[in-house]
Length: 113
Image 1 (cartoon, rainbow, N blue to C red):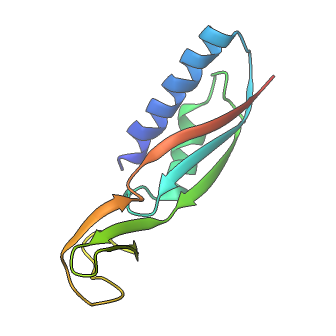
Image 2: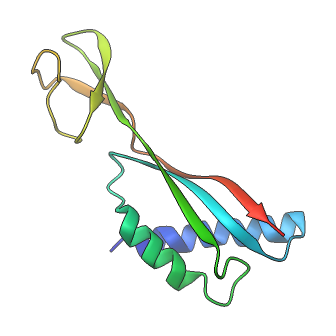
């Protein structure tokens, strides 16, 4: 379950921001997770709740926004939607694809007190 280490990384970012910007509590965390990132949103919520105990983010609501997967199809010469990393082009059926989006995960915003 790599979501645990990802949640720990998110908490580290939050704690760094709390020290830098002098806030005591986080109430909401908006997290962008790409559809092709391999991160399970439900597991991320569970792990986030576990790692944020006794921290500035304890009890914070985790809002997950899913970013769509996209790829450049070399045969079609255009960007196409991707549902899975090694899928085929939905337009031409080819497999010559370069993933261009949907693999990322980032903290988009924090609501703090």
